[in-house]
Length: 186
Image (cartoon, rainbow, N blue to C red):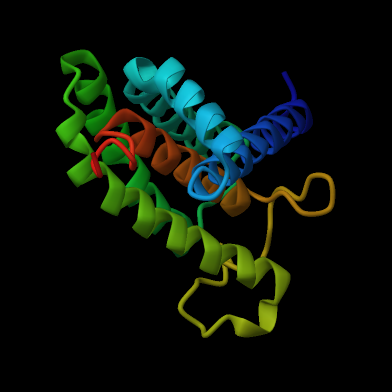
């Protein structure tokens, strides 16, 4: 399979993930104000709760595989910010895989901060793609943080894919643990 085909596939997967994340956020936020959205939120959460850690592990492992593909097969040299994002994602693969196998919802305590940090790094890296003038010189000439190797559909780059993966992992971690917000009030 060509790198162009992989880019298109991963960009389409990113769009699907983004739609799921936005839908999940709308349900979660809307459940506080709408009985209909609250029922939908509870139904979706109940349907995925037992498998949320497994899905999160699959997203992390898939993201690791994609990052390795881009650096080792497509020969895109990772910029320093990409390395920092990997530093957040690679342990997530192990933590979430072990959590899924052992059904340890407590792993959210360790996984969520890594996903938040990785997502934050991805946002900064993506902003550098949009506004290259923001680069402060922390990145190397060989692998500039402001140069996107992938730019599918006019907006999806590798950091954008990472942001989607980290956001989806956070959403799944939220679905995996703790009681529903209104169950704690009763």
